[in-house]
Image (cartoon, rainbow, N blue to C red):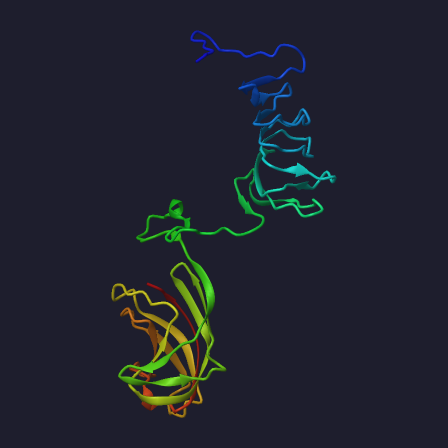
Length: 301
């Protein structure tokens, strides 16, 4: 093994003379090069770019047109420039990273088309203010339990988490049952209820038509898209607005949608009288067919 070593001072490799490069070879083949212009190539001789642009070039990469007003640090691989100065193409998928002008750019190149006109995209940028810009695509949470952590903004109050790890929106078809036995059949033309879930907070709304009944007996219950939070007695109750129409009974049309917080995935119809008395609505309070219209926000388990 041959070694170049300097223990007492800096070791200088000097390709003396104008335009000479520093070349590292193995078995007669160039493996790395530092050009006279100050560009570094690994496995390739880097392009003679504008003197303002200094870059590390990895692999076989063609010349690229760039703004000459700022210095950059580039990592590039496996791509070629088309006839257009602003379009850069490649034969295989490639990525590129650039630091320049105080910004951090993350580029991705798509596969070249038959006429070699595919162009770079910039899915991600970190700008001079520190903001992260998602320019194409999405931020994808790839592991359960991971998300956006707000713990640095904690104000010292009692809390269990400051991690936003979920967002979802969609529809669900509820089932309407009774606490003792029996159920109601939901009209297929009015059964798609909407929800939006942000973290553990779930907002639901919609209108559902009851078309018929099947031996209902007990308090009326509607299923929910997510199981409600079941915590301490003071924190697990939840009320929402509801309206009953065409129910055929003597109750006022206004009612409440109530979650008792016992861990079950349903909400009950509930009524509060003028004198403060309360009651669950049951099969005797409604007719065979009726409509429930509601809006509610609750915390999921």
